[in-house]
Image (spheres, rainbow, N blue to C red):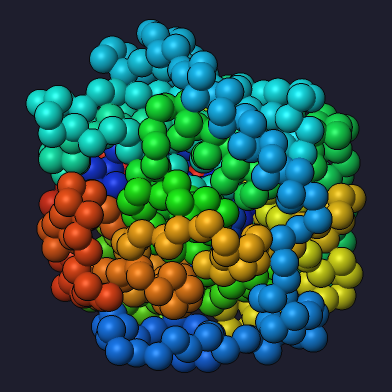
Length: 617
């Protein structure tokens, strides 16, 4: 799946978490994960997640999303399984699966690692220059086993950042840990948000703690190819690829997998959502917290929910913002298919908005005419890249950001209009990859790929991918094949995939004896979110009976906490500061629709960080 900035890659849950890395972002417009928040030019799918987080982006394929949050009396309804193909087992056969083999040993390993981490703590000090974080933010490391079933074996170090709570000691409530999604996004920059107005009440009570999950950034970084090859541009991205293009796509995916195996070796098997959740438990202990307070966005909602299932007695408070559909039979292949459908709807939202402002942009008075303008630009770029680096893949990746964040609506429309009127510079500024970000982008994509491919079974035959996505592209052409490009390495993954945990089912992870109930958690979702469709929030809401779902109606920006919706922010503040939820569900009116700006404004440092799949043909 793809994902987005305060939020992370989930990408596509193109599950993009798609080929590049998309982050969900706070309304401040500043990147939460600096290394992934700038728009690169590669596509990312989400789960998606992925992610991500960091995936799921809208209503079920069988019908539109409900216009309001579910009522407290609504009976749990499982989303209908889409009729993609006959691939995979039935939902029932997957949902009842017990914990994967070896989990008993891993459970003992994580308990041992947590005890050791609690004894050692984290030695916070001045942050290394590479993190680009300044005082009063401090940094440290926490050691975790590469393989929890062998806690005495190889260990890796996760980087952690922290800023102390600003309020009186008597009112402080410990650490608030944040993950922006992906898989593959870093939360190291999260402490910087403590100074933002939208977060100050919470920052007075909590230490803001960010970290880079395993494989990300300086946390035992994972790589699958040279960054320069990953960031190659210009590249092409046809919505209806030819047979020859598809053959190149398959060849590139196979080559990418070989690179992952060659560079990572045996460690490759240990980049999984289960291990991300276990790492979070060790981090909790290292921080000296008896119970965990956590905010996860995009893919962060999925591994946060996995954590809550594995360690319900260790949960204090949790906020899941922009929720990945956790149903085991949807992780991750079906989640990505759903995401492509949701991005198509969000793509129409943007075109309708541009058409309403034809007097400003002159791109067409109807959504169809706006689409014709976009297709005209795409055909022109197919013959000659803008600035020598913006081809059709870079164009698609840039405009995919309009599905993540309303803040991109005006810049995208202005860039398209300028290009069609002879000025390519705004489009080049919007869509060109940044060479300085190539290493971070490649790293994020490598982690995304490893986690999603390891997490769950994927179709192993190209015929299945081709059949499902050729059919899907007839009604959702905008993101479908870019999502395929990002996730196709999983078709050729050489490692045995895991079995997704049955989130919310405590019996799936062991006897209930001695277990405590999961405290109420808070779910946030925008009804028209493309990266993590609204159906995913409803699925997790049903799976966690004590949870509370806050819906931002008729809105689609990915990641809602800290944005311009005061109603949403009040619910989050109240929950984190007091533990009170707004009941089983609540709804908030949408944020104001963006208006054309009187003059071009700086681009927000958030949204999709594209890069079609490494070396997309």
